[in-house]
Image (cartoon, rainbow, N blue to C red; front, side, top):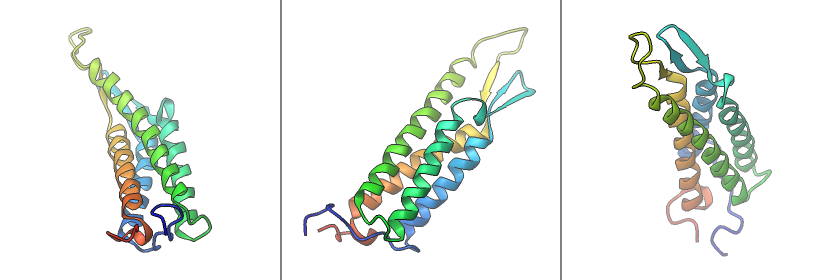
Length: 151
């Protein structure tokens, strides 16, 4: 059987599934949480901007992971969709993080931190990267998420 043509789905309780699932949950929490704090008293949610990309990627990934894990779509394509969604979410979060970190050195009315990243942005960034790593690990490990089972 050629490697990665159609693998067995990941076991529902397997560690890689739990890792990916936890990453998806943290992506949702991070997308909804505060992405920026401005002038030390204003907070902006991820849903006020690019957090929608992270939220959409999390929902797409959750659907693909569920389909793959329940044998409805026992193909590596589900893992590919999860990786792509994770990369999109990571790109959106890292881009927002870079923009916010770039304005920290600007000064206005004696305030040097005009905008600072919120915990939601940090969480969304880390969880999105974690999802990419989890799905990539599952893809590389192949059938059942076990080392050497790919072929």
